[in-house]
Image (cartoon, rainbow, N blue to C red; front, side, top):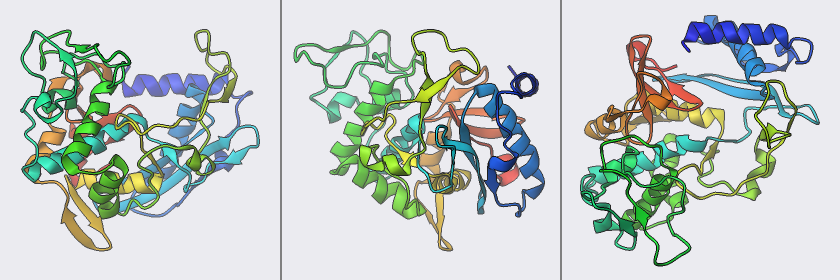
Length: 344
C-alpha cells in the first residue's frame, strides 16, 4: 500500500468510526511555532486519521532536524479508563529501535580497533553454542539478520547440551532475529567491560543529552510510562475498533528491545542521525561515530522486503528511499527522512 492509498483508507476509517471515537481537537498538545509551523495542522489531521484507523488510544510525535528539536506533540490518552492525557515527559518503550543503539555502540568499538565485524563471533564469545555446516557467523551477519540462526530461542538454552543450529549459509538471506541482537548485547558487554545500561549512557545517552531515557525496562518506571494496550479478546483475530485492555507490564534488559524514552530525547537521537553520527549538545558538536562507521550503519547491506518493497537493512536499522530522498532510516514505528540536509 502506498502513502496515498493509506491516507484514503485512514479517511474512510475515520468516517466509519466517527460516532464511537473521540475528536483529537481538544486532546492535542504541541507548540505552534518554528520553521515547520505550516506542517503542524496537516500532520495533526493525519495523526487523527492514523489513530482512528489503528484504533489506538493516543500517540506522541517529535519533529527534529539537523538543527535540533522543532516540535513535540502529544495526542489522545495515556490511560483510557481515567481519560488521562499523554504528556511529553512520559516514557514510551521504543522496542526494536533499541537495536540501532547496540549497533552504534559496536561500531564505536570498531572505530576504536576493538572489534572486527567480519571475524567469527565464536572468536569473541567462545561459550556460544552453534551447530553449523556453513562458514563462520560474524558480527556483520548478526547485525544484518543474515546469520541463519533461529530468532526466537534464548541465547542460553535450557539444555546445556543443545546448540543453536544454522538453517542456511550466513549472509545469504534476511530473517529478522531478536536472539541475534540479544547476543550482540553480550558481545558489547564483553568488549567494553561493563553492563549494557552503563555502556548506553556513556556512549550514546550522555553525549546526546538524552537524560530522560532509560537503558533497560523495569517495573520502577511504570509511573513514568504511558500505558500499553492490546486486544481484550486476544485469542482470536483482532477486529478494527474492538475493545482494548491494558497490556501486562514487561521487564527486559535484552539489547533487542530494552530502551524506554521520551519524544524529546528521541528528537535528539533523530538529530544525531540527521547529522550522520555527529552529536550536538549545549552548542558543542562532537562526532560520536566516524564517517566510515556511520556509512556502514546506514548502508543497504541486504534486501529486507518485510519493511517495504524497496527496503533494505543496514546495521540495526532498516534503510530505504522514499519520495526520492535517501536515506530513510526505518524501524517499524520510527522513521527519519533526510531531504536536502533535513530530517523529518
